[in-house]
Amino acid sequence: GRTLLPFLPNKNGYCNVTPAKTVDGYEFTGIQQLMAKIHLHKMGHDNERICTFNDALKHDTFIKRGEKGFYLPRYDKKRARLALSNIFLQIKLEIKISCRT
Image: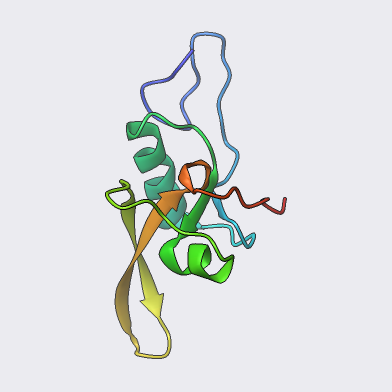
């Protein structure tokens, strides 16, 4: 069964603590991890495989027009400022990308 929020146990005591990762294996940490898991849960998916728009382009695939994603803040070292990454579910891509574990 589903829980009210990620990281909280369901009625059977199971807690999904598998970290959200991009298709290239980058594992989010701290508040990014928590925000990613909450957004995925709100979207009705407990899948941890996600990708950015640039990840999709890099792997010669695309994201369908109108596909819903969510934004995660990140620090851009090159520009020395906060930026946003648009995140999509990997399973929603036209061509599935195998995720490294």
